[in-house]
Image 1 (cartoon, protein in one colour):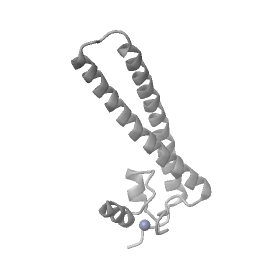
Image 2 (tube, rainbow, N blue to C red):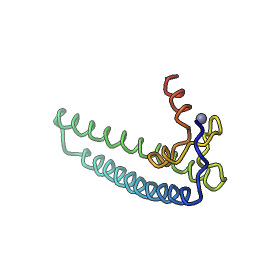
Image 3 (cartoon, protein in one colour):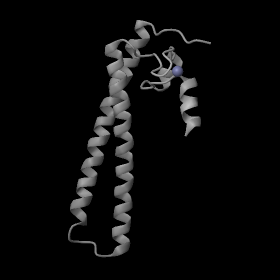
Amino acid sequence: MAARKLTSKQLERLTGALHTERAELTDQVADLSAEAAVDRWRSDGSGDDPADRGAASSERETAATLSDHARRLLDDIDEALRRVDEGSYGQCTQCGRNIGFARLEVIPAAALCLDCKRRAESRR
Ligand SMILES: [Zn+2]
């Protein structure tokens, strides 16, 4: 069953959600980089205990993983906003069918319809 094309109201709402999410993620990435920088500064000089160093580095890794994840999401959102400008937002980048409001409402940055997403995941 093909999903309907987005109405201008729905598009407006999703664009708003993308902008909100983008602002939150930008904050998050900034926070995490600040934390990593403080961590680096702290690990200079003090903390010769290997156990301490280990804990600090695993914390750093968690922050790095989180900010990686946030950056990837940011990329997805930027791509989605670019598609809004182009007028192709809401269409699957793989098969061109409408992704549908229900799915976009959950994941505004979704680039693939559910079918293509599933196919992409089963290939992994
Ligand atoms: Zn598709």
